[in-house]
Length: 346
Image 1 (cartoon, helix red, strand yellow):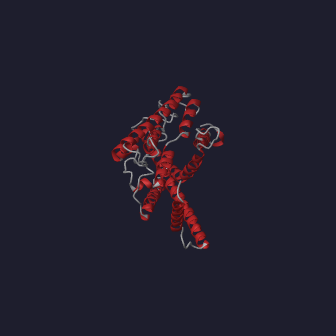
Image 2 (cartoon, helix red, strand yellow; image 1 turned 90 degrees about the horizontal axis):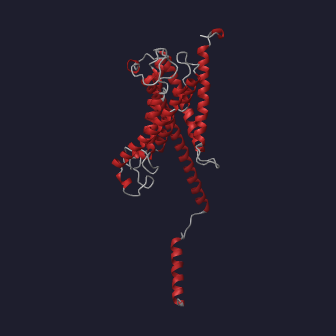
Image 3 (cartoon, helix red, strand yellow; image 1 turned 30 degrees about the vertical axis):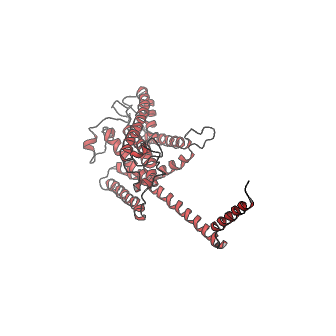
């Protein structure tokens, strides 16, 4: 039992502490309201700027992904068909590397579909930048406190836009269906066995490439950030070096300028050289950001299906819609080829 003097001493001490913590001259209510409104406004402005930075990065890397996919596809087999080869600066090399085929020529081997190298490379990049843990630094070959580790727009652009534009499910699926049908190939006819192997090979190669990317990512993390394997330090807990405002805007501005130059070169190849392939490229570059942004927004639905939370609903919707559009456009292109003027078959 405490004595009365001890109780009075404790009450006096608590009152002194309370008075020292409380501000003896609190600001007026209108000042507090103004400060809260200013804080809310700053948060909204920050979110708005961040969203636009994300959209800019996604648009940039979607163009890079489309370009990479187009030229990788040509390099490994797209130019081996003399009827569809593009006679430009890449042709002397690309027409000699006939690894893949679109399944609509005299060349056998449609199981190694035309976009297989793109899916391999894209899956590898996804694994490399995803890593084994979301708590690891986003860019494996940089130190954990490098300024680019805090560039969320850059990370989103690489993982969502670059890899999403480089890899393809819809074109792969369309080629396998065309091979099974056989109507589009007057030389080999129906290729059910090759198409079946194409589905298996495409799936297995993507999985292996993804795991190879994660393994290389772990090697880089162990080399550049060994503390990740020795302590509980996480990416969110680690201190990142601040990036100045000019650095924050420099990288997207430089990338945007490069993309404009790239598209201008495609237009030049279309107009000056008269190569229709480059017309397809610059149109695809202009359209790719819309599809990539739509895929990014749909990905927010992943895990939102209450009955099946494990099901990636947004990704499935993106792939399903892309497959439908790809099949429709392939059918239209095929009809334009087989039907001449007056509806006669060519």
